Image (cartoon, rainbow, N blue to C red; front, side, top):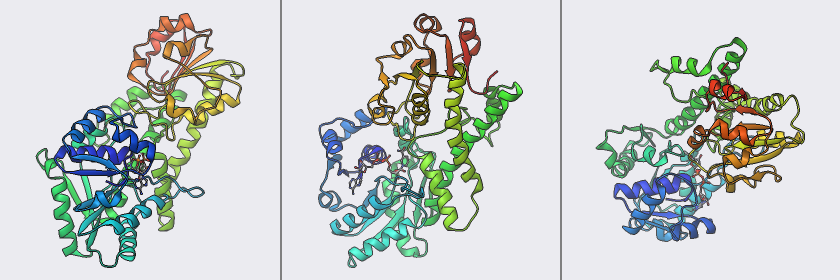
Amino acid sequence: MIGGGYVGLVSGACFAEFGLHVAVVETNPDRLSALREGRIPIYEPGLDVLVETNARAGRLTFGDDIAQAVAGAEAVFIAVGTPPRNGDGAADLQYVHAAARQIAQALTGYAVIVTKSTVPVGSSRRIAEIIRATRPDLDFDVASNPEFLREGSAIDDCMRPDRVIIGLDQKQPERARRAEAVMQRVYEPLKKIDAPLVFTGLETAELTKYASNSFLAMKISFINEMADLCEKLGANVQELAYGMGLDDRIGSRFLNAGPGYGGSCFPKDTLALSRIAQEAQSGCRLVETTVQVNEARKAAMAGRIIAACGGSVNNKIVAVLGLTFKPETDDMRESASIPILHRLAEAGAHLQAYDPVGMDAAKSLLPPETTYCENALEAAQGADVLVVLTEWEQFRSISPKDLAQRMQNKIIVDLRNIFDPAVMRQSGFSYLSVGRP
Ligand code: NAI
């Protein structure tokens, strides 16, 4: 497994749990030493136990020596980052290509080189070209096996996936059959739980990942626009989403209105898909519009907080609950909190923030003058307004009385709809949420 980040570490640990022998290669020295010492560099429920059990059983090892890791490997997974390239938003493939070259140099026998990173259509064939150019003598196949895990429930998603997509080079059927046999063995344990293994061509597998993420991003942006409409018309977006979601063609998930989607995947994958479509001279207006709607939403949310404070947050104390892009993760990448809080700080607000696990990661991304608090009530101390940005479960049980005692002005802007409007109003708060009367 090349790359011991979110995807490499979680899928490596899950493969080891399947009973496979997994060698994770990680080049970041801090990450590697943490992993070797049994410390998990990311927050993901259950991952520490899974890593520890499998490392102790000798099925999961960590190192930076790629030659040692790939010696005798039947499958080599690439799980390195593919961040957006500066300038045009296309996926930056430098880490993937570097990994492909390193793998080619290190392999000693036949292996399937599998891309787990989210990569644009055509990347697997490009990886094959790079390997061929680096090592013309090498016998290998490539496969595309995009990862669909969700941070926060990543282990369950890997151990019990809705589906596993595996793209093979169907232009060469014999080679595809050989690679398929290896992939069938990797995912053998999933057959017992009837998780579908879907075999496709390379291009389809690569595109399926972008299409899935973009569709979900579009679903979120859709409900966010419906929330705005509900506010104008006096309707309730939560009831609307419930009513819509009972239709199983629609489904209830990803219909929670909020401050705009973030995270390490949706923003970059929607941008990358727009770019892929442009390059293919094919229309992808829904996704392009989704990107614009989401950017505008984040800016609008800061405006909403300022408006709730009577048009100015200058010299006002803003208590912030939640910073990560969603609960149950410490991932701050592209979190909506980043642009919203910068906007408030520029408008003169003093920020008092609390997040159960995201504060370390937040420090380099949020305005430097932000005060980080020990808990939610400390953040509320003396505040003029309290803003909910991430729906951590623990915030739902905060007593309005405790908040009211601490806050200077009783204003709440709940961008995740975690509190009951009636309860908050009874407690004397001026309470604003998203898409609810
Ligand atoms: P990450 O940035 O957390 O991890 C990548 C790791 O690879 C880093 O620790 C880096 O040091 C290491 N690395 C880079 N080049 C290396 C090399 N040549 N040899 C060894 N290690 C190397 O990224 P993350 O979040 O795990 O994402 C990886 C890929 O998976 C991306 O393409 C992402 O879009 C995709 N993905 C991410 C999901 C997520 O929830 N984070 C979900 C599904 C897909």
